[in-house]
Length: 170
Image (cartoon, rainbow, N blue to C red; front, top):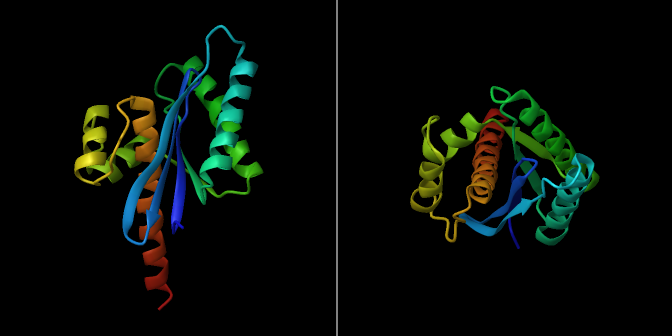
């Protein structure tokens, strides 16, 4: 089927972007993308449980070969960053339970891999996914689109890493 399929995740506590991007031969395609929402009316533990369930379901249905997560940006509101860090923890746990390798990428790394510009805004990232990388049906929702970008960043980086390893072993 696919040479590689990456489940990309843009973590959050209220909104979590999740996407599966696959590479088959030399073609990259967006397989699926969604935004998981948790209600502010729920206690944090219930919200984390909902996130974990959604990631486990995505892993079961999309069958990725790896998971890529955007790293928490700590330069923002500390209490918000802590909630996102907890959400990231349950995402990492779900990937580990499934036996999947996981990589984390900082926002700058993702933007550079997708647009070539570390200061790109969300609109520029969405446009690059379509125009530069040729992906179809990139979601308009920023969280889901960010998850697509994280997955594509991982596919690009892992391909480069593999090529470097092959070159180094010669």
